[in-house]
Structure formats: structure tokens, C-alpha cells
Length: 236
Ligand code: BEZ
Image (cartoon, rainbow, N blue to C red; front, side):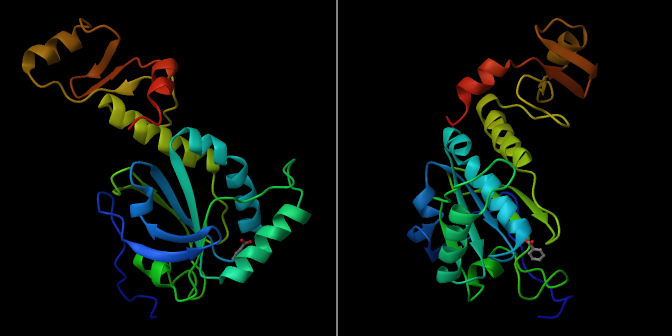
């Protein structure tokens, strides 16, 4: 593939492209098998490589956190199934890293030697590599819609706390009809949608809406407690 050839990438708001695949946990039909749940579909460049190993150990160690958020993890690389199985066995049996050991990866890892899925999801980015997928992450909601995407190059391992923050923020936005300001974390104030009428805007600006603070007419936040956020997570 030429470096400057135009490749179509899925977009935020699109239905996640469907595919059937073989994984380390059996066959999957994506995203249909994940209806009613959030899914994080992510690619890594290659099995038996150090950055990817550190990522898999970290992600697998956080799997229960994601399950508590009604979120399933699905990995992919353009390696074959036997390579995946051998690599995951090596991780479990031999690698101790940053206090993590005996790490068992129980989420499905897709084999994609034909690159069919990687191409559908724009994970092959020839300017970076013709033979390895970049580190792509797709956040897919319970209706199968792509809600966020992040791409990293081969040389940079992902921040898994950020991936968890994205899932929490998307679920909070859906549950409360709000938006999140920069660096938002549960317990921080959230952004309220623009006031629907001049009267409401005036009340807001004058501080008459409880828990609402306006910095200007177009920029108002309101308190949303960590407890309320946590009680709603995994619900939508
Ligand atoms: C790694 O995961 O260590 C890696 C994979 C492909 C290229 C460079 C680094």
C-alpha cells in the first residue's frame, strides 16, 4: 500500500464495522456478540514484543475494573492464533513486571493474518508500518456505535487509566446528559448543556440554579458527586 493512499477510517458516531473472527477465546461475531455491553476493541503491533507485553499485562490486570463498567475488552493483531496462544502463555508463565505476575489474559485476542479487520478499522497505517497494526483503541457503546477512538504509534504504550477514564466519562455523559471539561475525573464538576431560554440563562448567570456555576453565558458547570457517578456507571 502506498503511504499516501487514502484509507477510509471508521468515524465517531458510525456503526462499528461488523466482522467474524477467530480468537484465543473462540469465534466472535463483532459487534453483535457485544450488544448491550460496552466494548473496547484495540490493536497491538505484534506478539512477543516488549511494549505490547507491558500493555497486555496492564490491561489484563485491570480487566475486572472494566467488567464492573459493563465493558468487555477485545484485542487484535495481524499475528496468527498459535502465536497469540504461545505469547499469552509466555506472559503467564514467565513474565514478572512491575509487581504483575501470573497474568492470565482471558479476554479474546483476534487473529487477523489477512489484515481484513485491521484494514476495516484503519489500524494499518502505512506511514508507520506496512506489516504491523498501530495501537488503535475503539470505544463502542451497547448499541454498537463508535463513541471514541485513540491511536498511538508503535513506540508508545497506552495509558490504561486514560482508557478507563474515557469509558467512565462516556457513560457519565450518557447517564446525566452532560459533557466533561478538560481532565475531568468523577467528583469534578461537569458542563451543563446551553440554557434553552433566556430566562434560564439569566437565572444561571445570577447563580440561582443550585450547584451551577457560570464563567460566562456559554460556559456553565454543575456539581456531580462521585457517589452519583459511581451509582450510574455500567447502567447505560
Ligand atoms: C513493542 O511492542 O515493543 C513494539 C512493537 C512493534 C514495534 C516496536 C515496538
